[in-house]
Image 1 (cartoon, rainbow, N blue to C red):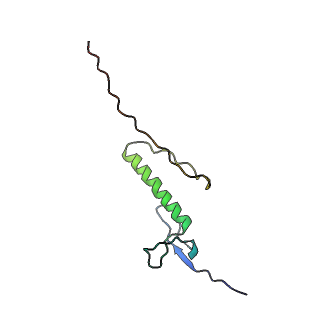
Image 2: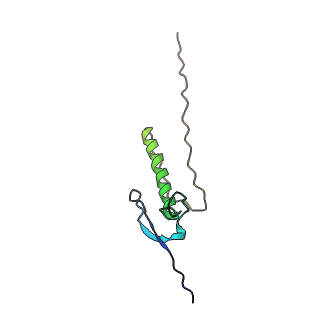
Image 3: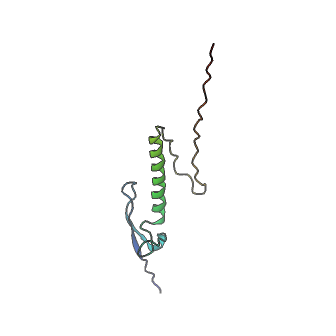
Length: 101
């Protein structure tokens, strides 16, 4: 009979984006060479959720700065489909015709 001990590690979560801190298996953490132990501070699923939330916040902030209405974000898409963001083209200024009599 063999018993495996699972090394647990603390995922720090993010209060700003509503990600709860929790204990997770050390194998769930991405490699992060800059950390002392070589592992990231968030588990993979929460790291992805965190970076996705950061991206959405940046897009909303840029839209607010430009005075535009931020596009509504779609609900979570199926994992098999790649996420794409629609591109918005700005209309070029057209010269106005001046008719002199």
